Image (cartoon, rainbow, N blue to C red; front, side):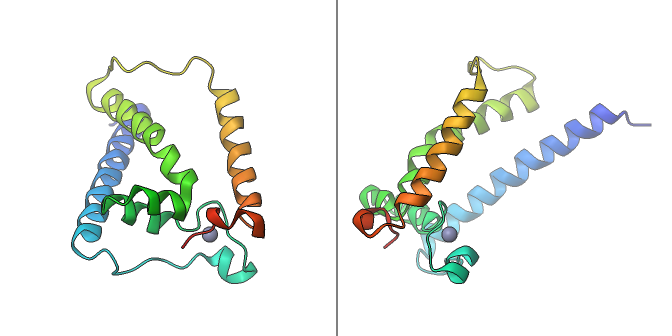
Length: 138
Ligand SMILES: [Zn+2]
């Protein structure tokens, strides 16, 4: 019988692989059909306001097309957080599949998570003011 921790490890590996496959699929779709589909934000549709994620899909598509400025214009927060997200994904992937990594772990994550939460909230609030039109998705 399989132990609980090895079942969790199997799920973790499956999640990392699924995320990797989703990213590759997303890359391929955006490379070959960049204007195919961008999902509509339910929050924006209901309220008329931009959430912190609005424009994120278009920002990623623009980045994949090599247009960094348009990507930043569509959703600067997501583009600026991308290197950190990639780092933590890679670190978790290496630990999950190889049991170790040389990539250092952050010492104290709580302040960083609070800063992330606060900056996401501030980004969401200020991008809805008319003065900050440059933070609204194109
Ligand atoms: Zn949104």
